[in-house]
Image 1 (cartoon, rainbow, N blue to C red):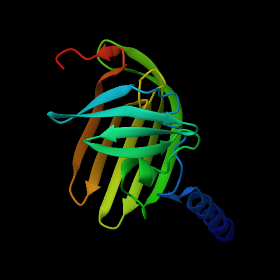
Image 2: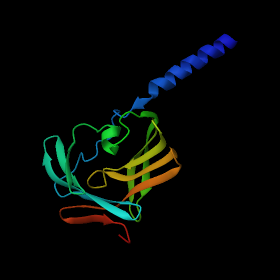
Image 3: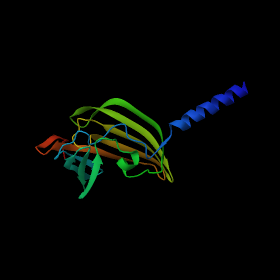
Image 4: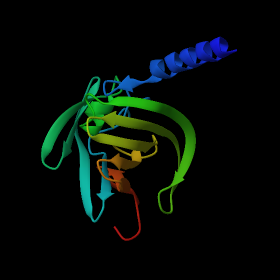
Length: 176
């Protein structure tokens, strides 16, 4: 009986280890895939806002301007976790799950995919949730929540408060 239990634990442990990934793991969606020149999104991070705008489109890529810096982003391949979040290059990614969902952005309900995963890196342990919707112009990202457990417990959130195209806003949250 003990031998069967030991074998079962070894098999389970191997299966769990096989599902662990690292920061090079690709996202299950491709932000900016349907973006056009002029598409933009404004996200709120605390009391600050940041705008990301598509300034050029080429075959298989777009150029996005954020905070005065331009970045070429693939629309043909999903980015890695590390390149999308600009961190977690050497992190261990586990508990990876994608489910269909919907979310109310504040007067606008959108269908989306919710990606959840945990991150363990040197000195950091966090749970991450991303809501992605092709209805959100620009990156398609509606909300990103990061709950850190180490080095200190805290939660940060980026939430889209406006998105649109060169013609103007398609949606804007009240108060922004």
